[in-house]
Image (cartoon, rainbow, N blue to C red; front, side, top):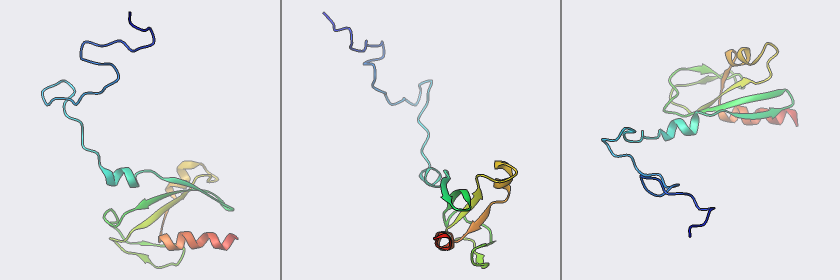
Length: 117
């Protein structure tokens, strides 16, 4: 007699096990994962005495323009890894904070926090 707490079998096989999609099936092959996008696509939240900040890493391969770092007032050249920072608690809302985002050297951003200690 089967136990009532076991999952029931489906027509395709055992329940709970995902099978790889065959090329001719309706689901098709699984898309390849973009590791670079997965690592850099998410912004992290940082807190400081001057507010909440969203910080996103831009890798050297994705840096295509020249920006001026607000920390040291020098150029962030194309092809150098840096950070994009915007205010999460902007006075005029999150959209205004995102519109005023700035590109920082990683070292300038981390040394910026020592001013508040």
